[in-house]
Structure formats: structure tokens, C-alpha cells
Length: 247
Image (cartoon, rainbow, N blue to C red; front, side, top):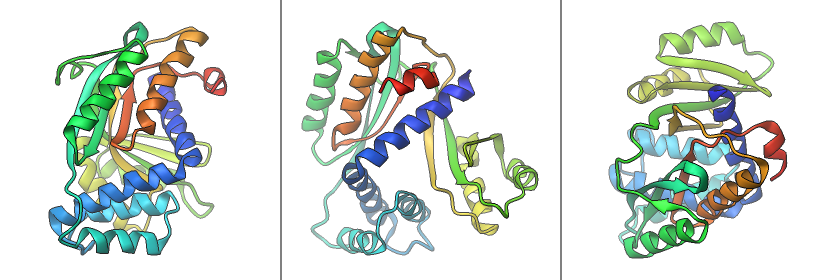
């Protein structure tokens, strides 16, 4: 069930991305900006920028938009973003981990706290959800006709993959956080460009809810994802195909 839930969560996020293309571009440009300011505008020597560009392409961001983002980030007047995280619970004990990238901490704290409060949730202290979420690398690879699934799976396992599953012509590859770089390098070596590659917080315990409670929690999660300062939202809500259709 955990694997299915992970895939359902990925699909939910991807569906939200498709419906909110402009907001997703804003989040991707922030990641490009931070990567450039951190290690420069050359993607050949900047792994974080290379990853950000790959994810931007996977979300169909136009090439000229990517180039403009890199150029702007290289300028002296580029915004200074920093990472901040929040941990808490939605109603019915659903754990929620929020990753943000902001240039105004007070605004971000106020907005995230407001979403939790208005939706019946509660914020906790940093580190309070460490026992629920494990940080892992997750790659989404579009399966093409000329790909040998078995051979590719073996190569990825040799490079550090812990789990490989194919759903709807998309291969989902999960690895330990420490193996993220080696798996990324392996994909580059064999000429495969993932649709998306990122570090996710994978839950090790899940919470099942009835349909009405499910919709209330997902409303809170969607509201968080709508905030411009929020990059990613992770949760341990069990999601079935039937309940996903309710959204």
C-alpha cells in the first residue's frame, strides 16, 4: 500500500502542476535562482542547476524562460531566497511536512501558520516528524518504446536504486538520499533524461480517512501548495484511486 500511496501522491502533485502551470514555473525559477547564486550559471559544473534545468524541461518550461531565469539570477539585483521548513498535523492526525523557499521569513511563517489554523491543523516543532518521514531520492522516467525495462532496472539498481516500479508508462525510481547523486550521474551517462528528479520525504506510516475527511485534508494541502513561498508539501495520507477521483 505504501508504494501505491507514494505513486498516488506523485500523481496528485503532477495533476496539480498541470493545472497550475504558472505557479509551478515560479517555483522552478526560484530553484534555478538559488542554484545559480550558490554555484554559478554553468550547468556543467553546477549539479543543482543541472537538476533544476532538467526539472524545468520536464515541466515543459520554454528554453528562453530558463535562459532568462539563469541570466537574471546571475545579476547583482537577483532576489536572495533561503530554505525554511514547517512540520505539523492536518486534521485526523495526518502528518504534513512543508518545504519553502522565501525572501521574507515573516510572511512565510504567517501564511503557513494561517493555512494550518484555518483548516483545523496544528504546527509542531522542527524535527517532530522525523520518525514519520524518510528523505529519499525519487526519479520519474518516461518509458519509451526502445527502452529495455529489465536491463534499465538492473543498471539503476547497480547505481543505488532501492525500488523501481513502472506505472502508466512512467518508471518511478527510489533511492537513499546519499545515492541521489550517483543515480543522477548514471542516468546522464546512459542518456536518459528524467521527467522529474528530486529529494522527497517518504512516509513510513500511513493514515486512512473517510471520503469527507480526505477531501478536507486535501483542501488544506492544496492551499499550502498554492502559496508562492511553498515549494513542496509531503504528507502521510493514504490515497486510493477512488478518493483521488473525488478531487
